[in-house]
Image (tube, rainbow over all chains, first blue to last red; front, side, top):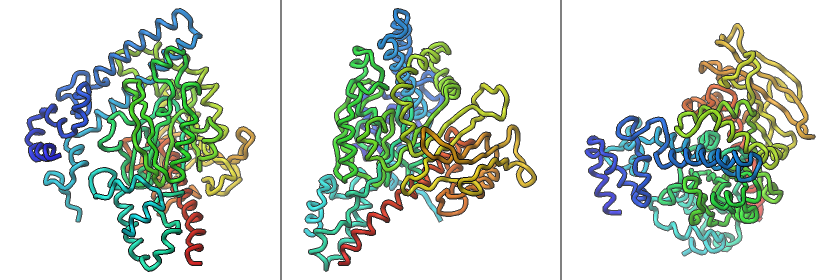
Length: 127
Length: 407
């Protein structure tokens, strides 16, 4: 925890440098899932590949599952396997769209301030 | 010391662990602090405290069921609902980042996908979809929802939508309002009994197709054919297992293509029907002009000018699957704020606490999909009705025990 607070004091400069890899160390849970690195703190068009699509891993999984589903259904269109395969496609599409929404709305400063509202950068004055 | 005796009596074992006011679940801490104050003012009645029912959540949890197709997560209805109660719902801090649960001060929303008995590979092997009851553990669902309703915290499994595996469980503490969202909240009869209120989102096939195209066309892997094939392949299971749940719902939000634009296939303008069951305890259906009468209303005219295609309302009694229901229908779109407030001022029984509350809630989330048509309007109204239902239930429950303490 102390390490986290130490990092937090320097984040304004980090944010100004637009280096997302440092920003994500605030949320240490991301360290456990390194493949998620690029998805949580996306700024539109700043550093990530396709802006309109979901994170890479997910997009690839989705494309693969569509191919699988088309294969299983070409053999037997009414089998349980065909339905299960398309169900998987549906599940991954839903997940991809949620990931896209999450990417759209996460602003690094907002995310930081949600968890640390008492720091100087996050002070608000409501009169 | 006095505090600890209260904890043991209430058996809220979760609260014992949060004795220090730290990061997790600030909402709960606040509740407990209030609770402490209550206790200190009743210090004289120490003997009574061991038997009173002045608890924060034991037995006061209201369970709401929401049936909606295709995946759970941060869906718009949940965000509107939690916003009506106040506060923003967020995933549990410090837990599994792929958790489907949302927690706010008063509400906890869980996704019923967490009760899958088969993970993605298991389903593929057996050739069953997630819609099939064989892929879900209804016994566990029933036990845990019952436990939460009785004020006992549970360790609920997590279904990870990204990996398709079942992750280690997370702790869920009983909140004031517990929402179970997913494909089968009303499928099992025992779980149905536990629900205080249930809602079914019925999206017609044309609208579903249009929405899925909008959602999925940005993905490289998808094409129009694959989207269509996906819907078609899931349809048999959906019709067999999910669709029949709408007869049990207390409120159904039915979304259909508009009738105002002939041959419209864009799906942008929607006709939304709010079907409300009559005779549900603590739930008074919303109505226009007078309950039980049939009325068709076009608000656009001299007082209000609307742009094409305008707005059309209707209200009337009907029968739905053998039940008496009242149906409020809206066709069209809102363009301006004053249209919304005008319409709100003519709806009755919307359970708002002040004039313009519906409009305010809609404006607060103007970026959510459906904020300019009946889906957003009816979701907000249902949220307010649920708040009203919750307050009535709490009032009726605290009424009796308080009398017991006076005795």
